[in-house]
Amino acid sequence: MAVMNHVVLHYQPIGQEFKHDAEFFKNKKVIGENQKVSNDYFWKSNRYIGKDWTGRDLDLTYLIDRPEGYLKGRLSDAEDVDYYEFNIIEYRIQNVLLLGKYNLDLQITLDHIPEGCDYNLVLYDSEGNQVGIGVDNGNGGKSITLPNWNLENKGYMVKVQAKDGSDVNPDEYYHLSFQTNQADKNNILAKQMEEMSEYGYALRKKLHDGQDATEEIQALEKIRKKYKDYYAEQLDKLHMEQAKEYLQGEKAPDKNDIKELLEKMAMGEKLTEQENGFVNIFATAQEFDTAKATAELSSTLKEITQRLESTGIDLSEYSFHIQIGADGKTTVDGIDDGLIKSKVETTLKEFSEKLMDIYFTLDTDIQNMSEKERYLLKAAVDLEKFLHKATNGKVSLDDVKVDNGIIEGISRNLDKLLNEPGKNLTYSNYQSDILAIKNYERTQHKRILAELNVGFRVRNGKIQIKR
Image (tube, rainbow, N blue to C red; front, side, top):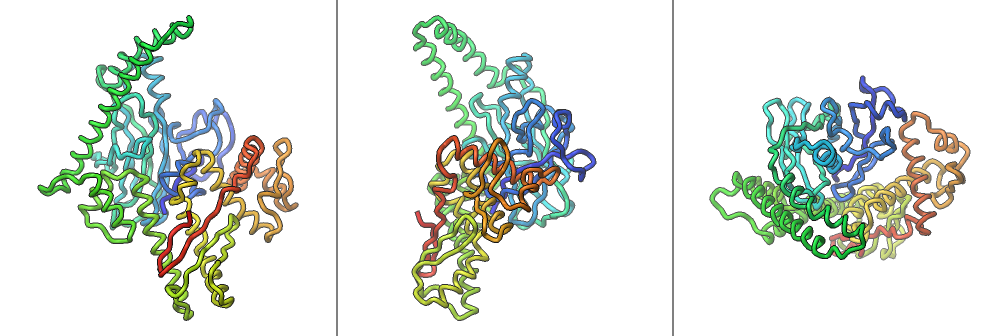
């Protein structure tokens, strides 16, 4: 599965403990990856540990306008994929509205790639459309310039992964950083802003005076549509330009062609270099990761089947349901033979964490949650597993209470660790997650785990999630 990263701030030199300190966050230049949360593009849950000196939650955006700043991360294996989210609206506001500058060209660079490795850099917009693939920058790294196609697209996600067939070095860090370049004063963003500013001013004045502002609202919507269409046009042009090296005189693939390639991926079939190129260019990040997760689900069942066959159990003879609890407990329904059922459950328990991650990627109910709810749900599952292991099953997340910021209902040995974690990052993470979850449950009047129903159906040697 892909890895969606939390990140943690570090002092230089690397290795010293991070601290919650206003001056620290104000001047910090180095950001370090923390692989606490594992998942894919859809989760978008990367947040640095702590807040900046103004009290805002930190994300990769923190590095913009910090020319000496960078994020350091590692790929643990060839299947590891790191996603990092950032938002450029503040940068644009600061440089255009406040400072009157047009220095809007932003470039993101991947460098310090471990020797002997080849890592890819890919950029997605807020809808998951691929809007940039890293190209060699002449310094041993890869760079992408963010497209300035309209003002509306403010959020981006950058992906780092090993190129197909490339080695990875889990002991060495890659770096991600931002650079700024002078843009044309008459670029598209400046033009859109100029067109909108006149109507925007008139709109605010009419609303302030209690007048009808229908004309201005319609004019602004028309301008937005104009540049939205321009964005789509530029996206198509970019994809066609990127696809040239793979076309070999053939016509470009249409949506149905890409759908077929994704289905081929989902079935676990190996794509050709050309097909891989097309999927990476034309498929959205979520479509790509969903296909990979579906293929991984099938390969996981195959691994489970092989494991059980060695004990004399042929899963193709059974139809049954798998249920996985938040604490990782795995149960099977539909196998009558008690001994076989027990062996299947014991084997499945070893795969419960992988199956849980796959479920989170594929389940539509989870996908329909807000970003905050998805993060809290994943955090709650991690906490439930932690509490179950730490207390030998005596304490669950439902037993935990919070009173004036103090975590209660936990065992004595966990009290100090969770309420006074100090510089221990693991327990600091657990503490902040518990406080966030209990605050959510208090304000929303519902358990975050109430809707979690991780289930799979196995039939005729095939597996799919229960919906």
